[in-house]
Amino acid sequence: VLQEMFKGECHFINGTEEVRLVVRNFYNRLQDVMYDSDVGHYVGFTPYGEKVARYWNSDPEGMEYTRGQVDRYCWNNYEVFTP
Image (tube, rainbow, N blue to C red; front, side, top):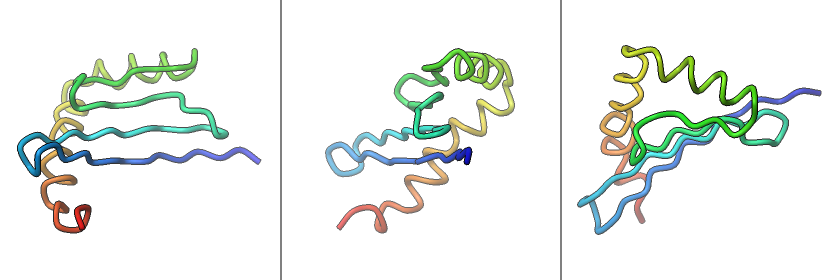
């Protein structure tokens, strides 16, 4: 059985002073691609992940959408993520 999943994490530093979004993509329990808003682009950890990261990083519209997820996903759910 092959399994693909992703996990999105919002990290709030000093309350809402700094917000960091980390999205991890897994395939068969192995992390192959990761996006970190502090880095600003995708990073591949496997040969396939490196290929996917290059492809996703080369798409300007897709990268603009991904960078905007910090506002759409993290800021809009701040009260949900923090106790």
